[in-house]
Image (cartoon, rainbow, N blue to C red; front, side, top):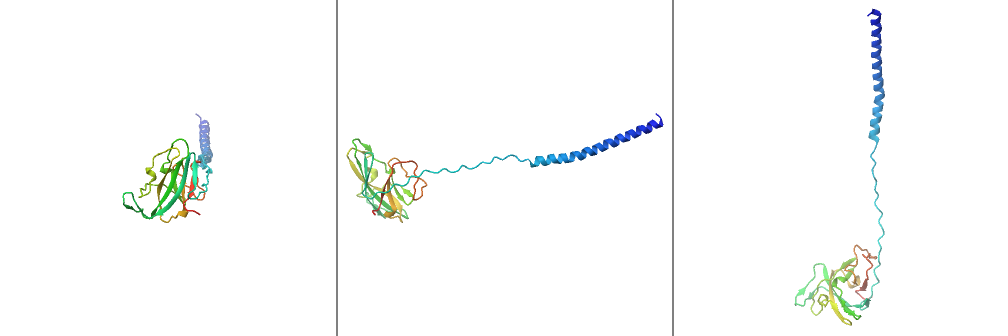
Length: 220
């Protein structure tokens, strides 16, 4: 190869190397911002988050507590005639076995005397004790066994009430010692065993629209 050709070939090689070096630098310059943009885009892209909203509470249907009747007043449910004859509060009592029973601390006894009469032509089932309650403010109290001397206990009555027959007996309730007759109401709920739950005065929400009969425990 002649001297001139070797010189020309060296120039070409040098130019080529310079060209490749320039292209690498240019490509590096172009790729750096692009990679930065891709990284920034990936970091700034948030995963969609589902936002749930709590359902709005629906209004609860409220049944107003029926207007109470007075002691000795009678009510009629189907063929059953019910009368609250009298009531009294005691701090102890003599059982039919002759022993004295005292209440738990902070409590006393309420006695409710009721009469039930079958006005129909067919025999009927006597309401269970659980169908009676006493309301003290917003507290529902249920009866318990009494067996008080000379007082027929409701729990010993015959479960069947024959046509045109009447029976009477006493129901015992344990009430707070701060309660007075004027603060108490006697309730008959023939189709339920509980007046309601989580109720607040003066509106008493009932679980369903069950028949409800109320007496004042003290006369006006």
